[in-house]
Length: 553
Image (tube, rainbow, N blue to C red):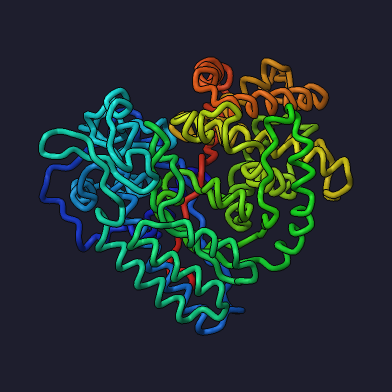
């Protein structure tokens, strides 16, 4: 489907996108309207619309009602993420955008900044997006924050504000957003009453308690303790990607999930190999001395609803949680593969990219099995490596600050490919050839690098592309087609894996800063190739028509 049709479909979805959607009945045209900045008009077509209408016929009446309540709670997460991402009134902003297509684009981006264009403003009258979003005072500098001493300053669950004297202080989420979080907690408790699996009910009640107390650890443990639930929800303040100033503050989001039992059973065999994969990482022993929890889980799901951070800009297709280092060491992590969302990106984006940029003789190696495995082991790799520095600089996250998220994404990508290589050669993975995984991985770099420098995934892919280019892991012919050099790709994979693990273990802030300064950019040749994808009208990402009405609830 060509780009001229993407927008028509997006408009026809009638603003079903999460809780950020605003009814036309509440929008007026009496105020002066915002206009697009020069060049923004062509950006309105970068999302392919996909209907998220997963079959729920196998669910009981109670389960269907439970899913509806989880979607209601998710819509509140959407409201809260708007407040974290945009320092202004959402309805007032949307009221002043009279063009429905532009209004829809603002809803997809949760504000006036284009998330897949390095957070540049697409509406006139707005400056560049603050690196700290709305988590910190707009006039606060890094130096001021570093020199200040107040309780909760680097907590995952506080906002930083100024008092009447201009001094910085921390305000907990559960106080700032008390009304919304109490409503969400009530919905989760109602859902728990309908849950047919007691550990799931226990998790929902624990997460409801966390909303009103600000204490989240027990709910993370309870989430890891449930393994046989058909329905799942990942909900609350979770990822720190929106905080590009320090990477401290979490964004509200939600995923409502239905487990794919057949695919999950296929993945279960990989979990038992994780300890050996940790031991065999291509780095010195001190950088892999930590033992992740033995209860790690690999599951496949169909997602039926996105909200908040997970729905902003590019859509997440796999999740590795919890992020809490102590819970990871105690319980491991759950790697959740969002199979239907992956399939949509593979069909609508990755295959068309390969047709444009991969040499014809290697295009048969672009397969969904390889794409699924590369994404899955990316999530597995988040649980490997090291969480605490080896030189008493605290956690890797604290030591590397704003670079921690993009470097962690880079680690997960490259170690994921390393693990695929090991398991394929050991015969644990039986689908496809190594060339399938490497060529699909290369095509995946082109897909993710289009997310831009404001995205942790986009930054990670820029570094990897340039590192691989320097190592001649791929070749580019006179027609602008890329081919994988299998031997050089393997060497570059091992070398980059070791480099990233060492930077994390050392907590080397300056070294990571230098790596991103030197490699975290898009060169002229790559920029020209990405422009070819735009001319071919290949979407950058997908947008979901979703909600209870779409699901028939």
